Image 1 (cartoon, rainbow, N blue to C red):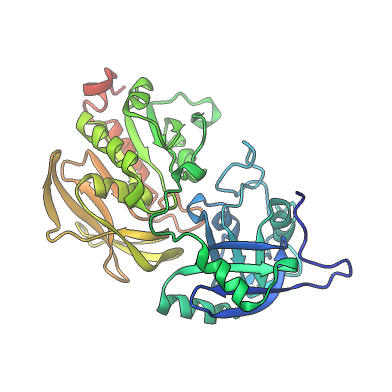
Image 2: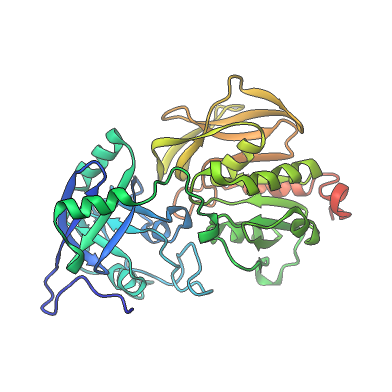
Length: 403
């Protein structure tokens, strides 16, 4: 079915409603596609980068509320998407279930813009609501926590009880296994740019990977094999890799047993390992930690993280609703040696990084690829590449040298 616009033939905007699980309803006007969308209501504190946010697979099945008051002023371009659309960049596939904003910019003004945000949302069938007091919505979610929600517009705008029943009937994000929905079906390769010869080979497990991640590894001399979420150790070894990377992604890490099992096998093989966001939770589970659902998570581009060893603070980009439960001691024994908590969130003290003490495996809860966001943590990719180039990297299991 061709997506329907949320405006009438005269250009008037249709009414719309944001319905929250606890019965709170916010009225506004429809924008983007017209209809119904259901998901978990979350908010992002990012003031820019809405295109990267909307195309981040980690937002799968989530209705995003923006704290920035005006959205759409830079339009939509063909370069900044963080996922592929029909196998091509084309501005990226939108993964958010819906979008809640205060003011929709009346015009797009950017030299790279190819169309408006609303035009792209209509084309991809994404339902949105504007003219909402997003400050009130964010304050409520901050106090009550992320919750089931729905946006209703057009012919789907019904009486309050009917809409509320639909919202409450949907599945919870807790217990959701979403890696298969967002992962690539077939492996693909990202090569170093400009014909540069690859120095290292990395297998990147796609649990919802953002496009900038393999680009940043490739820029550092890596040939990156992006592989499906259900890949096995043999699939990894067949690529003759120097290292393994685990990506970000949506859903409950407590359901990702296959990725945890693969991670344990990678650690047992002694293959250098780096994980971010969901990958941090997977490494933590492999090392014996538990995960839990946060009240409202961390989503934005301005979240401070402290590296415990140095006290250095990085301003980071984050998007997660689950976290690792802090262990009783900052160091503990594992089958692969001593593990340690390496990073903490300066705002609330949550675990933001874990590692094996010998440096062979490490992960962080935030997004060093920072699209969109600050570049404070980009050096983590350098650290990983340095690990690949260390003496004996990969040689114990794959027969590869380090040169």
